[in-house]
Amino acid sequence: MNVLDTSKHTKEELTEILRKELAKHPVLFLTGPQGGGKTTLSVKMADENVGAIYEGRARSAQPVIIIQKDVTEKMETEIVERRKLPIFDGDDPIYVDVKMLDKLNYIIEDVFDVMELGEEQLFNEISKLTAQIGVKPKPI
Image (cartoon, rainbow, N blue to C red; front, side, top):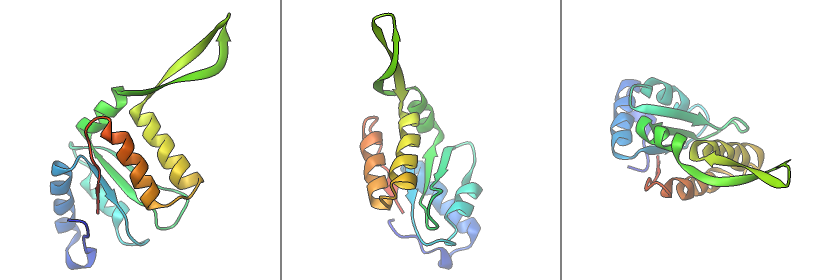
């Protein structure tokens, strides 16, 4: 399923459809016009299987990203980068581990909210990130 017509189902039916999709696809990427019900549906979906819900803030028609709880937990521990800080301990530089969930937050804020590169670029960046743990987001 790539298109879900929200006008053809009740909110309860839509919530159940998306729960089933989330069970099959650990990351859902919902796009659509402002007022289409993406945020409302994602909040209704919040249960023991949902680990994170993100929505863009800068534009009116923002995507909503829903992530399974077990994938969120894995992202909280998966280190994707060692970033050198502009601080030195004597002669040695100090490094910090960047976890996948932190990188996801950065991508959402930078690519979408700050740079306003759009849903397609955001989806591509999230896909590259989650591919590192074998997860492919599903656009709806």
